[in-house]
Length: 518
Image (cartoon, rainbow, N blue to C red; front, side):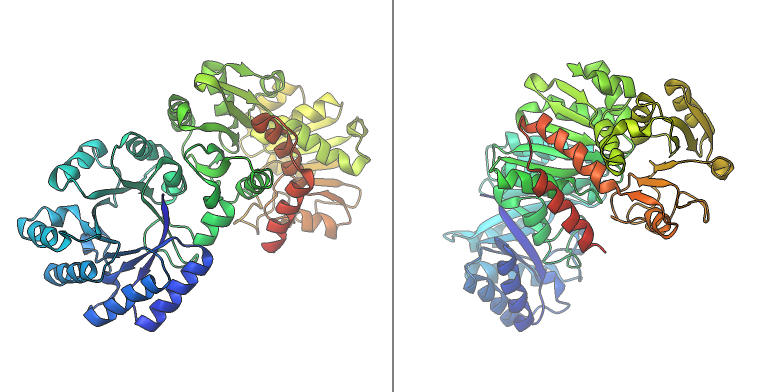
């Protein structure tokens, strides 16, 4: 079993007891007492805190971190050693001590004697707040060589999501109880997947402001967004790849769909920073580990063209639409790690835009359309518009990129500063301007929009962007990005799972999430 653990800094016992009760109410499965939260640790107070966790019938871990390994206050090790001995006497389930400290003969002998005959388990921690360890396997073996009954805890900062795979491999190959995951935003997936791969503990904060280590998310997020309770060793892994990606509602939407149909799968945010090289390394690492249960990915900015390139070089199948558009937003991982690549943006965008024209895509024929941006979404939108005979002009800050896309689809292009020099019936924003958290930005100048226009913003978070607010104020027809998002996601779900999703549930989740952010 993997315990979802809330780490709480030691404080006044009454306040601590309230936090423990709240942790249990939220669904925490264990509590760690961070005794280094006290400037002057008090033995009686710490004992009361241990008892308050035990009273809630939760496993209790007691630690007093050295400042070199994330401790808050500089506490002499003799005092920290005394706290750990007291925790053993109080029948704490685990005590956690730094491996570097435990190697000292005096510390080793004192704690070994205290643990003898006790049911308390020893966790030996190795932390690296700067980046990965040189070799986690050697470190793991070194911990067990010193104390074979210990539970090694190997935690390091992920500088990139690709650093997480070493922790996954260690967990999958270990033949003893082990704790391993990565810190930081790049290591988030390792905290969630720790349960699938068998880590004894994973950590979450009590709330969004209560982090005790970099990259922790709240218990509520782990439970409600990432479907913690449904994760097991056979859970299939899906997710959305992008940078940035934390704003994506895909995990909330897909995980509720999985839950409603009792599908053993989880959908995560995969922050893949960098460009083609980093993307290739990530997808290559996933495909090499296909037996670990990776099932597929949604792909968003800036990796849609990277995904097509990877699929053409290493994939088993690329659908004709993705090839024609030059962009992939959906990857399915199949037998032996072979991938199939698709584009569902095309249909999602065209159906969303056609919804204001009585659902008829061909109503866009001969419409003058201004497409803002020349990235992956733009490719799908432009392809669809050209197919129905719209008169498309692409506007982009980097003129050469707009020119290249226009030549490919035989339409016009211009610099973004030339937008006001041309008229348009339809304006489609395919840039990230206005996307959370940059909600005050708008891709068009003030006064450009008129009541005769239809304005479609592919950004869906927030639901009503600054562009759409300006369009409504001008009397224009508007289409929000949520409709495109939902429609393309429905097609993705069918690719992943092989059956139609619950459209009403998808729409409810997305609109509830977006309305809650207003």
